[in-house]
Length: 308
Image (cartoon, rainbow, N blue to C red; front, side, top):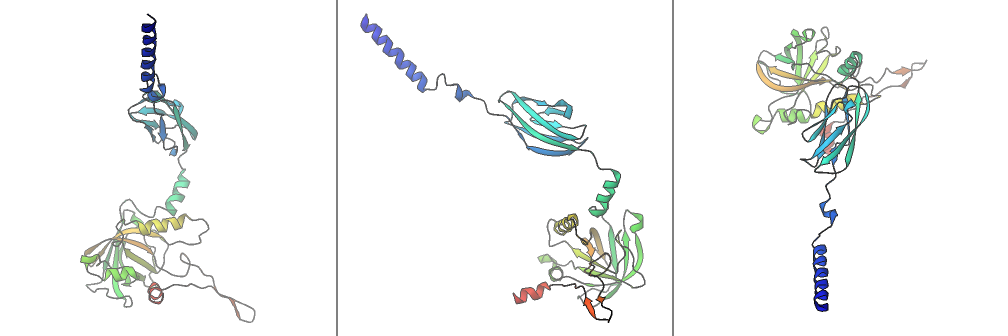
């Protein structure tokens, strides 16, 4: 009898050891994953919608606060705040995950009409439909960057005051790399020339809402597959505080002697003066001696490459 009891005790001990070794009774292995929400911070205009992604997928959770217009939509938290302020969006797991997670949502009021007009003047240098510009030289081609060719310009825009008809100007080539590429065959990405437009001295007009000036540049974008590189660079410049001047830029579609050339950027030509780079007038002393003068310096990229 003693032998049987001892044997039974040993067997029970072994079974318990095996059960423990196999993870029996270890609750940590059954622990649920923690719920998370992304992005951790976001902003939105009052009345607009911001969506947060909740992980892991296929879990049940609640979203609060409902006062910020937040609700669960599938595997996301959808928020549409009705008031400005900083809101804490909380998601709490109810099954399939554990815990809770938060994100910060900053809601701001829409801009006033004055703020929108200021923003449009500074950044929205485009119209709803891209303006169309037609150069007519009577069949004469622009072949170099020194010979001026007489041309008539027509501009069609969805803004009536931007339209022009029969504007007599002069054209020639411009640029460095853009001109070299424009002179290459279309088979290697060329064929679209950059142009400089020069108005007659007695007929200087505003162009597409820009202040009147004599010289303008039309730069093709065929060398930029995003067609946004120049535009973004110019807009970044315009966003910098303390800049006295930054060139304007606008997309246009260009026709040359009736032949469609594609998308171009119309921008300010490099010039000195009002609405361009202002270097100031020379300053003289009482005896007529020059004591101060501004300089406008250009580094010729081709010369730089040849001499580096």
